Image (cartoon, one colour):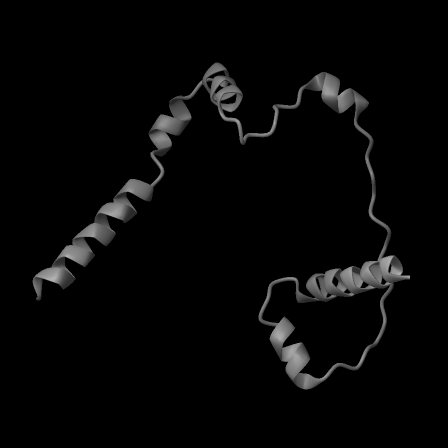
Amino acid sequence: MPAKEHSTKKRLRADQNRLRTDWARVDALTDEDIEAAVRDDPDAPPIVDDQWFAGATLVMPKPKEQISIRLDADVLEHFRKYPRYQTRINAILRAAMEHEKKAG
């Protein structure tokens, strides 16, 4: 095996080992440890508490309307590559609709 290939494989193995989750360490964390980590992380959303939940409002999405639509086979084939492809199509159509509304 060439040295470069061996070095690449060794580096990949090291990366995989580094990325593995140490579940024993995670299980040992206390609530206080987790809360401190969240407070110290500027990208973490705030921890919600009972007071937050008491003021929260449950918003149920409007039910979707089931229709039959004819799409070009290649268009449908493209979207079916994605999970929840119908939701994706809906989001794209919504974006187009919102754009048209703004355009006047």
